[in-house]
Image (cartoon, rainbow, N blue to C red):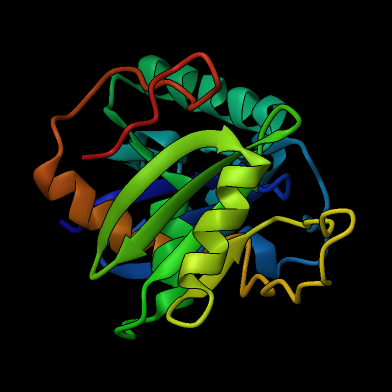
Length: 217
């Protein structure tokens, strides 16, 4: 019997839930007009189960986007994922948001993807996704982020959410445009299945925040 996966993505502040049966996506709440913009994760999950004729007893693993991103939305969704997995006695696996959006934007291309999202002002999260690997992950100030962007502007694509003002008394700079701030559910499912094969199965995951280490080797 194919594994049933429940997928929860919300670090971009736009709730989306998917259901996968094996490697086939059978529900994507981002395609349901009645659910788009709705922040109630329970409503998304229940709609997915009802649409697919499934129940939580059919789900084998919960996969959740742990950020970095909107901390309130991410914490809420991670807490929900942990509670759901605990109640159903199934594992929960956290997926790094930069791996999700990096994979989505790269779509198999050779160019690296620089992923950026704001944190507590004036800081940002930044990382580089290349050849399926996330590296150079850091929590740093806007000036360091600008330098990183300048160094990669001609050789990389960009993902996430960012907007930079130009420095006073300096020539105007043209900053890159983000190619996406969330992953498709097909992309989410593919990465989830890969992680399930190589990750230690857990009963609890934690959101990425300023107080937690975000270093990626």
